[in-house]
Image (cartoon, rainbow, N blue to C red; front, side, top):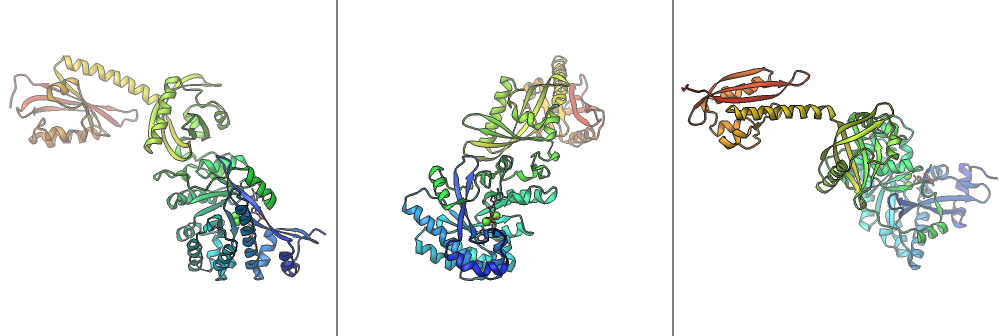
Length: 536
Ligand code: C2E
Ligand code: CA
Ligand code: CA
């Protein structure tokens, strides 16, 4: 008669079931999604009643908790785990740490830590193979109580995990106050939830884990998409049906023998200044397209050893910037280099390598050949600003923002060509010429200025340095400064006679302002011609 047992039946048969093996444990491996190796396992309680059949923890745990029996159950699980670890040690097996669940009611048993510690010693298992999972709700009885338990667990050398993180209300505060070693982030709390909360959780966890240097294990991971998504935000440890359902002790032992294991490492090092969580849009956790707010953006995986580049995520704006009538899918499954020429590819890879080695943002401009069904072939110039946001072994996650700068580029080239003509003409006509960029206060002098006046090719914070050097005289300094202010305010041209250099040689100085297509002043072209036959 397979059915769910009622409360009385559960209480009634609990101790017998403990004794005769109807209550037992199974183990669910935790896997590194990158290497597919086992990094640990969680022990889960099972109850198969001889009459009523399989009972589910979600049904019977609350009953045990209400009836003050959970402490016994948890100690039983702990003992079974120690027994298993002991026999693995005895058979010189590969070892992985095993986590046990601690009910929040165990907190009220002040001897929980001492009790498990006694069992551990009885089996002589090193504490490094044991981890204790507690939930946010443990803090309900007051943070001090949990902190005490946590400290004594740490004191004995156990790692502590925060289970079901994100399921409660005050996740962030809890994390701040509790010094846990591992966060378990349950995908089931995140997926299917459209809107704010999923976003908040992902963002918080990534940020928190970053500054707390905490390991994250993603739990309840059922699909490759979820696992890849977690990996892309820097969480490579996975526990879930995607890799393993909870296994019997026997199956677990077999798996352990076959599967190479590895230690858990907080290997993800997200760059401090980047807010990785912000780039994601959990609204579409399934399609995994990130926020539209950031403009064109993509996340690549770059393997530094093989030089292989994989596209992990692309957002809508990315496609728009490239003017492509394609889907994220198309791009991801395409060769990422399809639109690059050899030269552009080399520039691009160099930039990726630069951001990896410097840990700073690096950018490059590359011309790409785009062809689309609707618009035919086109050549576009793309500014890519990239940053390495995480890595694991040889794999680096590269976050890239892109902007189509083809129009700007073409315009710049035109202006540049004009500039060159002007500079050359100036040189012939005995004119000193320079270009002043309003936004940056940069001045670029002509060749003659550099040759005759010894100016560098770029002067910053113009005109201060030339006032300081005495090229522009102190009594004209304020007037000359004022010219630059007027130019910045949009005056079309300014001119006047000024004595230049300590010799106070009179020059006719003029500026002509250049405006952008919105009528904002962009640059001013300055020139100075000697006033012949005139002196002060
Ligand atoms: P939990 O600690 O969050 O354990 C993970 C639960 O998720 C397990 O359910 C596991 O079988 C299930 N699970 C793992 N991967 C997936 C997946 O990919 N998809 C889905 N849908 N589920 C997955 P289980 O064993 O039924 O345990 C339920 C809960 O019962 C546990 O949640 C834990 O809170 C509690 N529990 C289990 N064993 C113990 C124990 O020994 N002591 C205490 N105090 N609580 C326990
Ligand atoms: Ca758990
Ligand atoms: Ca959990």
